[in-house]
Length: 118
View 1 (cartoon, rainbow, N blue to C red):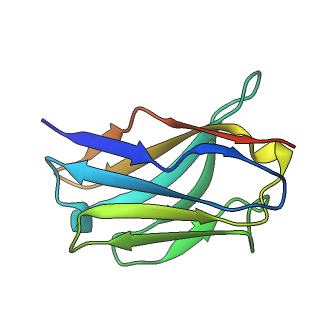
View 2: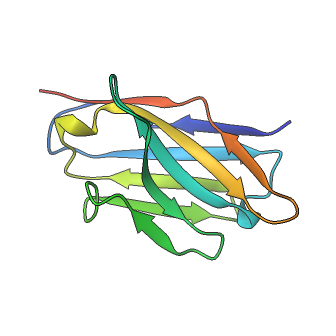
């Protein structure tokens, strides 16, 4: 059974930081691109950041320079460091693992709430 479990969400003031973690079981993370998506009320789910299986990151322009995505293949997990948080970053954040090719697969975590408010 594949599980992606997010942690690290919470309430933070504008300008603050949070670090989200995604612990994977049932899959070998090194074979997957890992991504973080977010879904705010009334909005479509959007890609926040993604890191390929070879470690190349990409970011939504709205978070570029503030968020950093990383992966630890030895620990079978991914992370998202979020700095200089803004109220518009408030959303449920989801971890995603995606594999293309003959053994294509796509998995989601259950989500973790991030609220940026004073």
